[in-house]
Length: 260
Image (cartoon, rainbow, N blue to C red):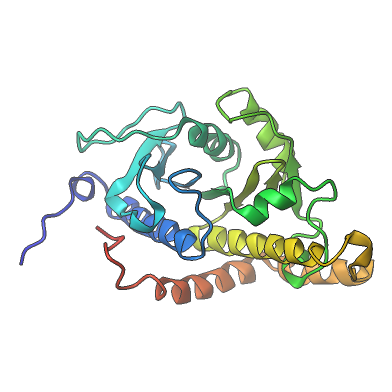
């Protein structure tokens, strides 16, 4: 049986289609690891080329059903620039958050934002992410915080998001959720996976008692562990690629091919 080529595939380059497929796979993996919030939250990736376009989810598509052709190409002003003629709505708050980082950070190739129970719980705690697990120590000294300003519809918030993120790749949006910006789609997946797991561990650890009941590693151990994770950026990218290749096997054979 011949399967029709999606119009989106005909309207984009090989490089863009490759990014579309990887981004759709990331949506599926976020769903696989239960980091979704129904149709809300968003993941974006930069489109290769000089036009400063990026891809984001079509509003209303469940993450575990996301396909390459469901992604919407948008410019930095929020205008849909698809060429296949299909109407594709996008989440305005998603545009505000993601465009801020794509505009300001050249290395922000892929941006992931989640509203998980553990992420929201830690985002509401005054002490933030505690250095109580190996997962959390990956972000020790490498994690930013941004105060809650309401639903992210105000374009003025973009400057404050960028300022608060600074040189980091991960940020906790207080009373809101988690945000990471990776140099690649595999790195973004690695970052959000580790940050989410760190938050899950913290919520469960605190369920057994207050902060004063927790064992915290000595400061020198925290610094050394963070350096082990972050001291070699190229090695970190390679590890992300290995994990990504393994993770893709988790979503093979799903009900809809993400590469469609």
